[in-house]
Length: 193
Length: 289
Image 1 (cartoon, helix red, strand yellow):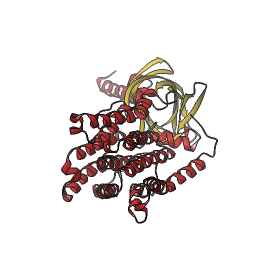
Image 2 (cartoon, chains in turn orange, purple; image 1 turned 30 degrees about the vertical axis):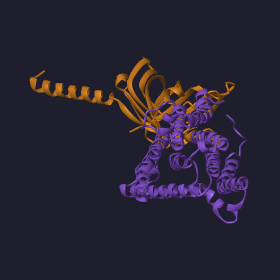
Image 3 (cartoon, chains in turn brown, blue; image 1 turned 180 degrees about the horizontal axis):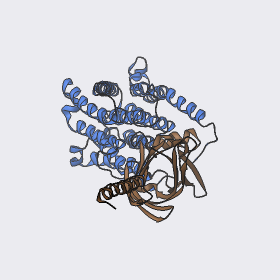
Image 4 (cartoon, chains in turn brown, blue; image 1 turned 180 degrees about the vertical axis):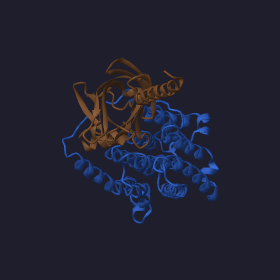
């Protein structure tokens, strides 16, 4: 091969290598609020679970399949959107006795580490903010799937279930009647930007 | 279903500490020198509210401010010129406290609002609150200590009920702390009238109750309706009814009863609306806890 052909060949090869690396960098997905659920359950009088959800969720997921450690999650939930299917209870939950949504309007989770457990399971460590208190937690996130949607977009889905103690975040009202452990299920579908 | 800290600081400590303080100031010259009834009420309310909340440091949580506002009110009662000196001085001191208190308590409502609008809110609240304090002081000075303390106790109790009906249990419990302390003062003042000096407690009640009303209206997601505030404020003027002829010639217990009845009547629209909205919101069966 003549040197005049080698250099362009090298350049082309480098170009392909770089572009394929760019395709495999973290893809950023915007949380689709219509296909995202932020649910919780908490014990009532020690005899049953009361369920609720938050109706206003937003955020982004930057997922790098080739290098999961480079992935990032940033989720924001509006505390005042709490919904336990009872209007009076929801008003009370949003007030200072519980979420104090006017003083602490958002719940947030911002990841600080993303560790692959297997192809579809990841340990995600991040700062969780609730009631104005921020604490590090680690949650196990499962990738449900990904693929093209009928409208030309590309989507990915994750789900995680984890438990926190509300007292760790300064929510200590009515501990005898309403449990301390809150099990959260967060299921999200992200649309690639 | 209430935790022990809340029972201790919300139910037992206020009347016990108030009673101990009043007895101490009656029999110990040292205590009498430093603790007027008003200063004692401020101390008892402030300590009990902070104990109830787990001894938080100042700042950080807007719902802890009533304790510090009460302490500031206690300083007024400690300073005789501030409590009963020249009018301009008294006005300035009250403006200073209500100004800072308004700014602190309205902070959440004024998030994201322009500086000029915030200034209008804070200045309006400061002026109205200062007028309220001066009018309550005047109304309670015109009547007997017994009427004054029972009206304040009744008003604090009804305010607690109103706050509870509008979904702010914490604020209701704070008003309950004030009710319990004033209740102890009311009982002791009936047994030993000389132990109770009404001027100071009026100032403290006129600082603490509006603090809770402001928090219960503007620092919550849904709370007291704004229209309820004038009714609650007017209820503090109920003792004036005992100065009208021929009421002023009635027997003591009749004047006491009338003043408290007027207090209840003035707060009743707020309570009635609270019950109505509770029933409407609870179209599902009561959820209990």
